[in-house]
Length: 318
Image (tube, rainbow, N blue to C red):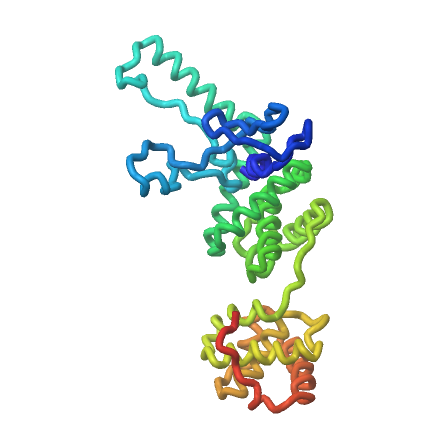
């Protein structure tokens, strides 16, 4: 779909350079109005597949089927040969039915006969299972499928585990889209070991040249606060503490999870919403030593500023 969209967005003719591109939706072609060159003949119709009788039905863009998706091994564009009747509903004769059965059998074999398609069918099933267990949104799943397809196209999976690449692609997708899922959580639902998935993830970064955004402590506060079941004012105060410390450059080079845990611990003390250090560290996936070190660092930065009483929580955390 992305390739066809890029072709549809082409605004100039490659032959004469004219920008007068005319699109004929009936023939599915884009033609240069100056020299007559067919710019593209791969036009995808996203309109309804049924007859319309009023304006409301004409504006309805729904279509049958699952639609185009990278999470389906054939991208959702497969064909199916089935049925024993013709277009008029008449039953086919015996010889035609035999021929159609043979065509159906050959069609089913050809879909999974290639190594590429067979690999994708296994990988996408594993990706669907892991995404469901981790409760990940659809855009993360689509991005992970795209990363896996890129690694398959570069022949990185030959001789390596499919499940490890699926887990690594899913973790890379979470990092790219800033969805807080640590590697330990992803490896917990995978069939492969943590060390193997971590090694595969580093391979993806190197070979696909992926640039990961730097994680900040702000995105980890809601998930940790949800595990601790702290009050909402406490969570908002923790975010405000981090914002004040960020203005003083007190968050640079520190573990974001440790900083989020330390800010929540400080906010719990301030709001009398007491939590033990060990419980907060476990919820953040870090150690008590890290929590105490980050707490001391935050306290030094906060002590240089006005009292915590002047830190008013903002109305919206996000």
